[in-house]
Image (cartoon, rainbow, N blue to C red):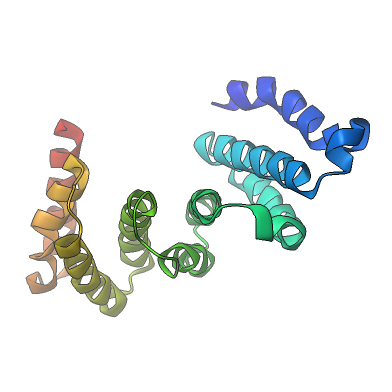
Length: 193
């Protein structure tokens, strides 16, 4: 993935500069927003996938500063996905509070239609983040919230089904060793999918 980013990075920079070099884009707020969205969507996704979290943080900060200029013409769905990539970057940096902040930007949006999938994966990342943070109180709250969410959802991914089928048992588990065994068993089951 690092090689992929290195190969694509110059192309992304060319894309970012197109509003400066193509008058039709420079004169169109919609086209500028399109270039902005595609640039940051790809850049942040590639950095997160490559595990280049420090560079990802820098891109996330740039994205946040420039977003106000384009936010009104970017779809909520695209913003939610970029927010997920940013949350993942902060999770990778072990900056859990910042990851949680970005996850809640997703969860505070409507979860209807196409956004339902983004909500599902964001809920899973939130669960993992609270677990790694050691925040058992919030972990239990998220588990309860996720159960309610899944009752309203019609389609499940195999991963979701497995996770939430087993996670209802988690609050009843006491002791760190039992919890560790629980998560290890879950990891093994997920790897079998």
